[in-house]
Length: 77
Length: 308
Image (cartoon, rainbow over the protein chains, first blue to last red):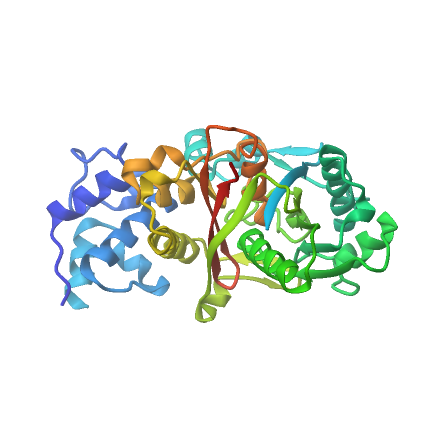
């Protein structure tokens, strides 16, 4: 089981996409709804992979579309 | 062996990426900060890869004062032969067009964005083995011929260009240590299908942002240098986002990673020599790390040093 929490994810998000409106981002907000572009999303998942020591295959990208969903996905790995 | 002269050929025609980005729903700031190309150069439809090769060789010879006939080897890095064919090899076509003597050996190297670093390592090693004193390495890949203009992932990225690098013992930059690697298990992340280019952007980004910094660190360590000892890191201009992601792994020297693709885009194996062309005569620069990465997936890094 890979462990990551919302605070860490928010920190990673600020790191890869500094212009993101973190204050207005709820844990269940879809990244699409804050216009997170594909490169920032790839970069976020890369940092999650490094942090958790897991690999997120392309077919699982749809399961990683919010902070809560990433936490849930990583907990299953 | 030393790098003596670099001359590029950049087609005059270009497409306006800003207008095309709107069609794909990409915002101007994302085009600038993530893709990095406002324009993409396009080779004249009537011209061939070998025409790019001959033009930049002629320019390099004019710049250096060397006669084309004095070259002993002509090596071309390309994956796009004339008229989309792979036989004969482009270097032989260019050899014929330039009227070079039959003592001039030719071959092509079938690599993409890692091709310049691989090519320098291969050619400098071959020159030592055969006792050659002057040769030219040309990168020339008109990707406009294989890009699907409706593909959002690639059509805003790639531009056409070529560059000729003359190697000669009297050159001002010595070719140093290099590391060349391949991970063939990831080969399908960049490929052509029926002559149309396809790329898994996420996988290529992840590969570049992890494997390339690791290799650069290893290279610097193996020659006993530190990050601060390197004046410029001329890495492949895959996209502004990729250059930024790699540079961010070297926070103390991230400003030494130039990103210069606004008017050209990703020019495949030519992106590194295009950066070098602007820097090899800058006397304040003493050491540079070159790094190319892409198809294969393959990646290579090399140290070059100014000869004092």
